[in-house]
Image (spheres, rainbow, N blue to C red):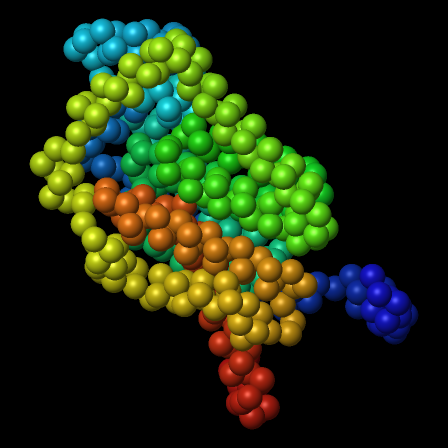
Length: 396
């Protein structure tokens, strides 16, 4: 702490009675109370909309996989790979998502429930955890009222409300991506090696949940390398970070090879996957398209937060002073730039990839809503700074 700030703190402390200092300030506790209310609202909305009349084929698949792993362990996947590679009439083994199927099996073992309800409960808990952590990240790096707005956007999001009751990986990968982003932000703000190791641990596991995790993993690794170079202007720290990233990716790949029963079995699965995973009529008609696919979907489902988030991402990447006015936490501008790079980088790949689905964007729901909330908070600060004092007091 600087000496001037320390002096101010001492003056404030000495001029305030113990009774006054012990009394909670409404301005301090109000955003926390509102955040808790939003989290309760989110829980109520997700429980009220929990029942799904019909399950998609992939939800039934993950339920079946999880039940087999709960009974027989990951070795069941190895046997499935062997049978698939030899032409048996079995499902595609999806060994590259062993992290998710093992998570499902673990939850089924712990709960004793091997039905789809156990799998969808993972999504519901992941959704609520994502909302809570969104608030924590925003409060730490952007400010308490930014946290309130971001949490509200996510709590009532039609997209996340749909994912929270389905037996899919998308809410899980959204949570893991946000945890990795939090670790990244902590390391970039001086968190040390522990936060960097946390990023690679979480992001490495996410690689075993769904293939799209590679986008955020790659962006985060490059971001950490850039941060290391900028802090030292020496080539050795960023090379060390890239080595960490390579080791993490190789570790995840080694897990996939092991659960496949060896490289030869994995290679055989990859050869057969072209035919097994060839797009069917549904995928061709409803999950393919140009960039307008997502533009149309977001315009219909939740246009305002995503439009504000996209604008906030551009302003953040270019370090626009408007987005981080005075009064924000010290590392707000750098945190916003990192979140903007994640949202724009992931979005660019998703918009350009031939296969599309609104749920594929789940890893950037929270970052986008954080950017949208930051833009709203910046606009409010701008208005308050320029409005007549009487009007400002009336608004507040």
